[in-house]
Amino acid sequence: NTLDNKLLSLGEITIPNQAEISPDLTFRYATGRPLASWFSSKIVKIDTAAGVATVTDTPVYDGPQFPTFQGNLRNTVTLFRNLRLYALFTGQSGGKILNVTPLITDLTGMSAQVNLPAGKGGYTKAERIARFGPFVTQSGTPVGLVLDSYVQPTDYIRLQELSATYTLPSALAERLHATGASITLAGRNLHLWKSSKFQGYDPEVISNTQNGGTNQFATTEEFTVPQPRRFVVRLNLEF
Image (tube, rainbow, N blue to C red; front, top):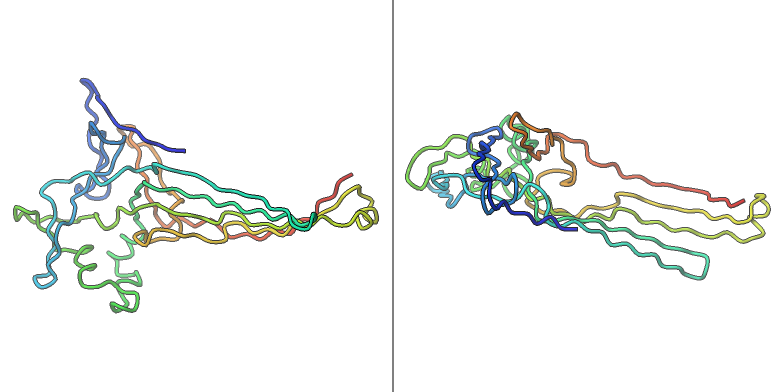
């Protein structure tokens, strides 16, 4: 499915911008943009020699909150008449989320990227400046906290399920007092391919979709437990 929307007009209605954590980051109902889109000061230049990041003079459009495409692909293959293999892939693309988990762990000095050296999992000098600043606008005005690096894409492809079902011989089913029997081995949430720009376990998980005082909504990830991986053994009996 797709979610392609654009605000054409609010008429005489005005919906105030809603800030998230910093006045630099807001979600807005802006004409010509998707509903409740992210707007953020964007980093346009990082000067590692001077140790400063230059950002846009005003917050600019940074993408939609919700994915513009979601889909799944499934298939079943039968081998040797008795063995049935099933696979399910799910995925999405196009959306962005405010990833609060790395923001908090970075600012408190608890993240691995802050403590490890560059090249061994830690931030490079440019990546540190992009997160901690200092920041100035293109016109030279100092800016406090810029969250551009933490508005991250939620694109992913997941191997949601993989199973093998073997139909047992009729004689064995009769010994179980059944007309038919099969055994299934299955695994769920087996692997996740996600954008390298997403600093988290699972971009599909959303920790906050509550409405604010202006009936707006924000998608954020904040120390959310990812989906568990599960393995199942099931005996199916028909009577």
